[in-house]
Length: 212
Image 1: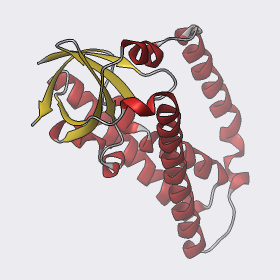
Image 2: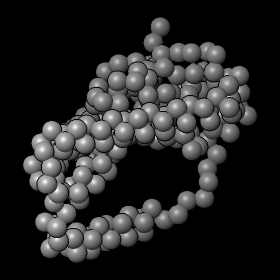
Image 3: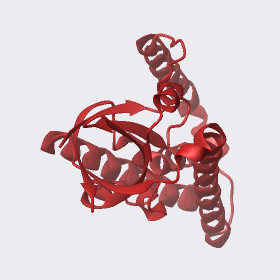
């Protein structure tokens, strides 16, 4: 059935879903392995908490003042292009001679650290939610979320595969060249990769089914 989806204030792990006058808090980190394979999000059910109190709902969706997102994005892109042009001539100076084993070990350590950071962010969101509305989280349901459109699914999956391919390429390049800048890029991409499942559900209208 049709449902209205909203962000939960300062808790990216969750969404508030309203359908037929009933409110649910959707946990996008359920199950945990979905962090690695987020494109499968729409094919399985996910844990959600039914919330009856309107006071609780109002707490969850209150909004802070927002800065202009477009201005920030343009500024970030501009800075990135400038930095890329400045760094290109000195890329070779960041190469560090090391064994393949050590370079591979560094890549693995960075990957694990970024995954642990992602888990920490999720748990921090969970603790904040529990502290705010713990008494409302006893009625657990399973929700099946349908993807907004085939176009959205293809774009999302394409972005996932592109980031994954670029991530693998950066890892291989670092192992070969030992370039510190490549490692920094790999670290940022790994963090973005592990945040991917949080973008599977966006505000607006979606098809949602409560699993019996």
